[in-house]
Length: 326
Image (cartoon, rainbow, N blue to C red; front, side, top):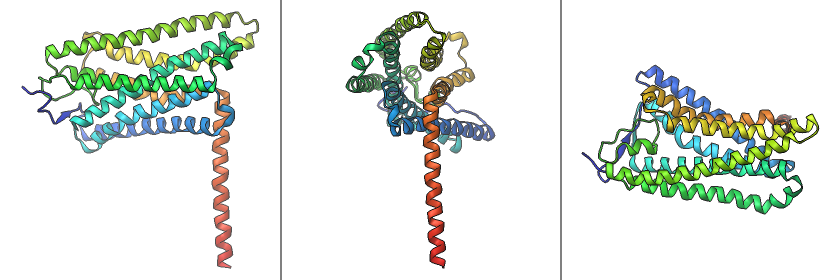
């Protein structure tokens, strides 16, 4: 029997048993992480560099891309390191840091998605008040509130979890440090204290979910009242990416945490955990870019401009070298 004071490291779940499968998982995680870095990095660069994209919708999209980058950089590098070097160890402080940062970025993303729902509601239902309700200062305050709420939630949840007494070893049934797996190692009395905090968490999440449902009900009612078909299509096209990202975020997370115990076995748990922690940050940029012509055009302009700049620099160097040789 051990407690949290005697534990110096945790043992994470191995992604595979054979060396070939470990290398395959490393390559898959590398490809997914590069796709996430490229997609989210392009969104951040495009929105930051394109002045005509400095609007509330793209400002919140930039913040969403930052949370996606943060969440995937919290879990994937350690998983890649495990697969490449065939190790399962993670230090106690490293596990606590991973839990904190994952909770921070995921909760901040959920709060940002709620704020983005409000942005779509004001844009469609109250377009005449859009500039007043969503000015630059109001957008900055809402984004700061989302980040601060995520930070405070992650700090309290992590501190509460790692203050529990751990009585059942140090082996976690997950490829990254996750609170439900740590709770399985805790003593029964300590588990009840964390359960109260989990109920508080579910209440906040349910409140945000109800807000989104009510907002989209109002949005759909307003869209159906638009007389022209082209206007309805344009209004729906601005909402579909956000709705798709919210659906992906909630469906994967809900299935991972609320699936029945009869469906819980290692291979399925591992696949579901990758589905909700790794796949959404990689897919979100493509969901937004595929439906947003303005973002695609700005990204293409940025990429071609960068290519032309590099080409001009290379040509200048070649001309300089030729002159020096002559």
